[in-house]
Length: 483
Image (tube, rainbow, N blue to C red; front, top):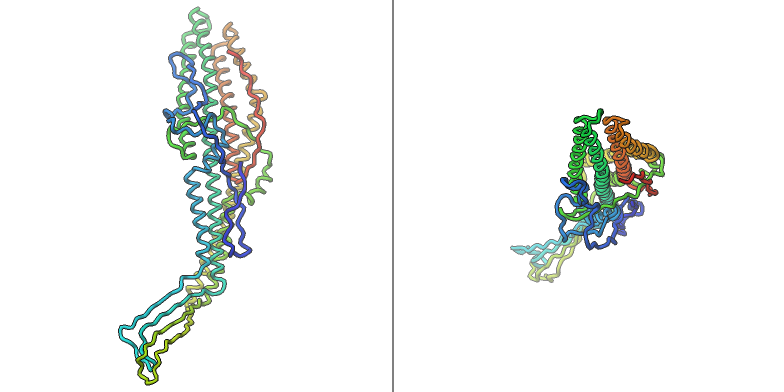
């Protein structure tokens, strides 16, 4: 679940108009159960004696290292999201950068180090009061009024940009975890579909071979071969899915920063989501939720302060110093007393090169214009992405409702009736195969639509920066006939 938190409080010296933004941040799930043993998502029951199982183990990339077991049993998507937030190196790097930027604030608001100078005369300078033997000077530079505040505000808003970028990195990692997890879910569900339909294709092949051997007039050798080719096409698809699962598992491990061979089981069923918000409501949330826009806003404020600082450079900085001269008692005058001399010094720099100062102000103004235009461009891009992703999620939801309410049930019934009709020679072989392929397509499409809808929602939440979906009861699966 996506939430909103704020970055660490700035130093107390910041001015009252510099407030930390409300950043979109994904909270870390700290209470992840310590696993004890691996549990694979699917069994390894052989479908035919000469084939490897269609449903591969959860870790098809290689053997699972017992030392790399982090989760006990099937792991939910929320658990993996929490684990990624706490362990992903990209997030750790962005967090360290944000904290480093916060450390710049007291540096920017501080005075330069004072200068301590000691002068030892190789040849003493004689005065009436006595010879000068040692000269010690201490000076401090004081910037013009408001310069330190401007530098502090610039550093503060730079830190806010870094924290907004941290939130964006977190959202990106969460999206990677969800997309890879959902890819694994789709592959596993597809493999289950092929597992079920393989046995039914075996039945069709057996019926076709029996009818061919009994010289049925409508069944030739080409029907037997076509049925066997259809089964081999199924095996090809299964092989492709198994390799796709390896790739999806690698993407998931990358987002979780896990080594190869770490056991990961995903849940066999998803808690499906729906979008209660309309497009207008989503667009209204962009300003409050999106961390990229927040970074752009903070950059604009930072650049405004940079203009203020550039304008203050027209005024001189002041350098105040104190001098101590050690005087000896061997003066030129008979009344020499050797009394040490003290003096004060005040100096200023002379900002007389107006062309340079004007150019600095122009540069700061152009940078603020650049930041403002980037903000507008980002807002437009986010709006377009949200409209596209919302339309995709709605499309998948509508198609899914049609598949679950009518199409799948009728396709199941049609294929079951086709097998019996083919057995008694009431329909041809090609019609039976067409009905099988239609059922396969619809069953795969159902899982594709579920996965695509959840992925569209995950991408929508990543683009927007806030949670927009709520859980809903799972759609009842279409009952399958017993075989």
